Length: 393
Image 1: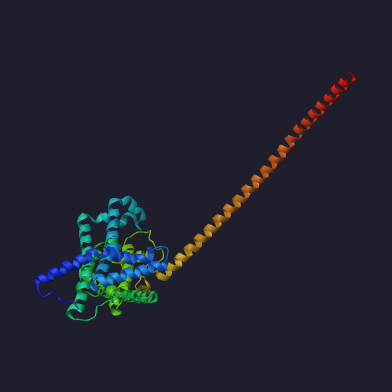
Image 2: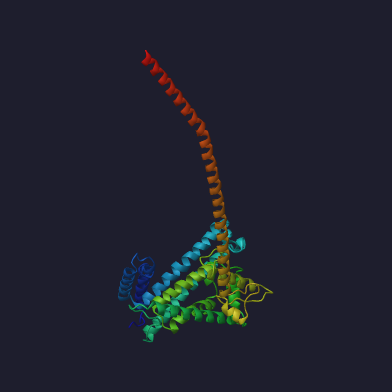
């Protein structure tokens, strides 16, 4: 059981050791998480190799290093790097970005100016690092100072798929409820410093883009974003792999929902969530009724806090997508039927033309054949006359 450093030299040695472990951990850990998806043709062989690699990681690394290293790698590769790439693309190629933004040039971040963009990026990245440091600090307090078990389970025995699905379902429910409560009452309703901070930081921006997902006053960010995400993992003491899977989903959700893009990987979930986020930013403007505090829209629908004109929920998004797909299928069927009818007519015309050509060829061939017969008959008569003359002679 590790203990807290007692001197400055021990503290610096521990810090250097942890940093070195975190730097060398992300790539093998990401390979472990990617094995089930890209492990090869044999599922059984992939799972066996996945289990063997994970067991080696557990035996060769400290549990806190695995938990924090995995968290750092996921936030880095699933949110920070692509969010900065989106921002760079929006600034360098605005003509292309405006064509995929939901509101065109209104959602281009370069209109904020360089100084504001640098501030937003700096605060956003700082909040991501702050959340990881706080998670590591809590784990160190529990295992080092309090000598209790870790907040998350780090064992070589991996959770069953059914247990993972159950934990993730409970996690999304708790995260949605806690986020709604904090976001609505602490950041938008009660006149507290939290509300003033939230409005003067995140809502100083009139529209979202991916980096804005973690841009807020650090206290507001921890209460409204980090706490709802980390709380279910601690309450149910998830396996660290379950936590990492949950964090991957949350990171990608933040990346796309705040992006402002109209073209998203999921037209059912992400598109509806993105439009609700945009409506929430609009509702904070003066003389507008605020709303859309939740993620999926279900809590807002039940509590009556959906923004006017944007009251759709997850169920509405699914229904709209089903109707679009059904309409698209009807269009495809009509197009295929029309093409088949046109092809049938073309084939009929071709067969009719071919029949006429054959008949014409036969009509042209008949005189030629008759001429050849007459010529052959004439040749035969001449030959017979010559033979008779020869015989008589």
